[in-house]
Length: 246
Image 1 (cartoon, rainbow, N blue to C red):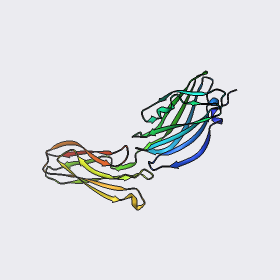
Image 2 (cartoon, rainbow, N blue to C red):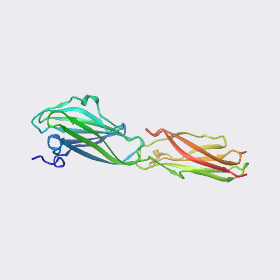
Image 3 (cartoon, rainbow, N blue to C red):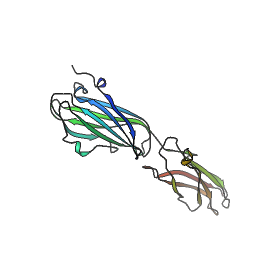
Image 4 (cartoon, one colour):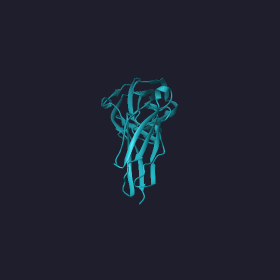
């Protein structure tokens, strides 16, 4: 009688941090006992909260508890954000032996809850297919207040300014703002750092957008570009609306 895989999946080793803001999780999976009658199985690991631009590395340990060798014939990634070494193809796991399966997840600019995985296809009879899934909740590493700048009811010769605050979210990898610009000649920008992350809290910046008179009457939709050093993020965009009255 085949035992349920959930009874055989155990944690091994621990979690450690590396300099690239990645961490590796070791999990042991007894593959011979982890598939259902159709030869399919799945292991899910919950990452919890992650941020844009982070790269997570995982190392699953596959232990062959069967009486015949396990051969990895194919590895199928469900999206471009998950990768494994090409050397896994053709890898043989002998009976009572173990092998590591490294998996890398690039969070990129995912937002909200996600579940991404790879599928290992084992050769031999019966055919076995095993899915390694990483799920979590991806968040932006910053907050904007307000999320849009609106300058309305402005006279053609009037100089008016409004600011937006960019704040690093607590727990997110630190980043800096390197430059800001806006795609119109009727508005100027000024960047000021209010708080630096080295002071013990997340960094905070204010960006002031001001009109440059004289301006033509009408509505102008512009975009404020905030360039950062954040991995996988680089540029934050803030919509700007300028409405100049007759």
